[in-house]
Image (cartoon, rainbow, N blue to C red; front, side, top):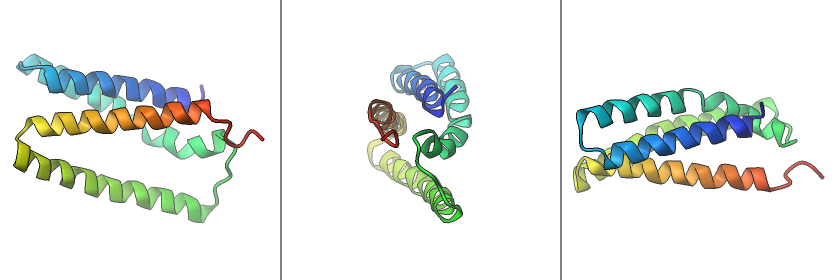
Length: 120
């Protein structure tokens, strides 16, 4: 299976989890949404690393290290911004922020699937 397919499935599960978390008001919804989000995000990094090669873009060691450094910075910045939003708007901001991030990821991945990157 192609990395794009893995990412689309992961993002679809994360989108469902975000909707469950942002609209659910019960403890069961919290558990279900958290489990879905964990399953979705656990397998996102490897396909993201192999996606450029699947699109025909060759990566050197330096570019790969920049990719990993960028994902590390994102791992620091996104939780900080979400926690600041939670302080300002309340706990719902966390789930709505995750929903916004997942929708943005969906848009990027479907754009990658529709482009002819590296094929010509």
